[in-house]
Length: 196
Image (cartoon, rainbow, N blue to C red; front, side, top):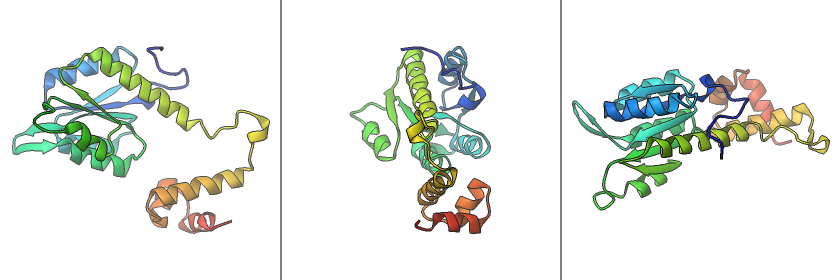
């Protein structure tokens, strides 16, 4: 196992959002990840995490499941739900200090579509290993459609059609939203989405 990013992955494209209400944990994880060439954004509340998810390009989220805020306790499930809406393929690793006998965070988080759960106290080395592993997987997934052999080459129009159809399906068949996200005309999306 290597402890670095793939050569074609830049630190800027690998921004990790760390959401935790404990400043010591935020700083510790940020320093550990920075030491491996990763850029980190941090958030201490659901609102702050929401802004960072809406404004930035996030490659992975480390998410505390319980966030103590001035107006009371909030759940990381709120952030996870928004992340799945805005960035469905971004890995989300839940980090929690909630004892398993008090609340089954692992089941709750996995049912809410988290990609992993780690329990506090946790070694920053373990977190770094998980983050780098997920970023390698995401990086490999993004290039999976690229042909590796001549026999795998398909016409560009066919590839475009498959991609647009997948995006439309991912966005619950919302043609307008797909056109907006793909930055192409709505009619083009509708045409490419028709069965061939």
